Length: 473
Image (cartoon, one colour):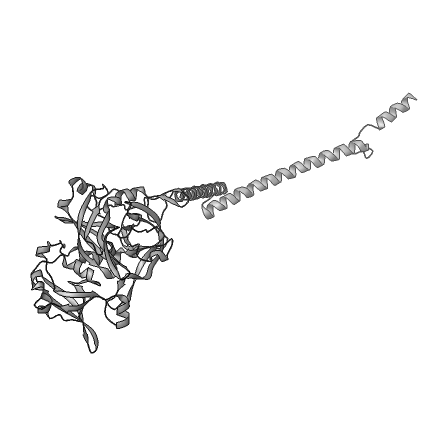
């Protein structure tokens, strides 16, 4: 029994090469072999992959001079630089938007510029800074230019008709002017012709409230322009030191929508400021002052603006944001027929006329005993009579005194005087006003329209003025 058991135990022990090995033992041995085989295959794959990676890197270096590791590094750098550039662009856009929001990126410039002494205000860049919705601070421009703008007071005699009777009374009107030059003896001021029309006395008030008498230098009724002069001897030194000469700009460079500033003696209350934009350019309007000798209206082109232009602003300055005069305001243009619109004479059109007028000899009124006379009786040719009878507007000579200056010059009844020394006259009052500046013995050139079978023809006649005794004799 024991021997048998012992045999059985021996026969079940493992013997190499014996097919009788137990199944559990064989299963463990197969799993180990599989693991070992997988490890060897993985090792071989890793070796081959590493060799392939090294070969690819070597090929990249040979072909492109760039290792793969470097390529990945450069790609990262490119992406980083692109992100930085995009960030900088974003910051720049934000900075520009911020500048625009505070008015620093305005089309006409920025920052402040000094005022050039003796040459008028030199505001070479924009002074406007937004202070609210659509509102700009123009105080620096106004501060620099205000001393170049004056108030003009005109004292004249107004005539009224009441039940067929003509009554006269003293009247005053207010306007503005722009200081455009200074000589050794006088200060020259540009304004509108209708501001000084029919003036018996003219006075100019400066920004320091000092007043001085003024004389007419020359007028151009066709363009509603005039130049008046103030003698420096009539102005205190403090006022001379405080005033400035306006700097003229170029109205041809204006664009619609450009901001502008109007300064003038609005309503006769003294200097005031309004702002707006250029609403339109080259606006054709037939001004009431631009009547030809035949009653036709002359059409001129003006700057239209929504800056308020009220009575008293006429003759004042329309400025750009550099403080340059780009127009001469005129309240008479458009009159009460418009609302929210004002007009100004473009300075590029006005400048040649102003230079011509300012170079004329200043007219000083002559004492009554020294005053020269024509020796005629005249009647104003009103517009309605001109249209009905086909007569030119001017002074119709109804009679000529024998032996008078007019008689000696060959003037006859029926002639119509339209100009005296190049200055147009449309009424007898205007002719009498002009005659206040001429002495006995002075020569004047009258432009008269004489009737012919073919109509009226213009003729220049030189007249040597006589005295009041020649009329009464």
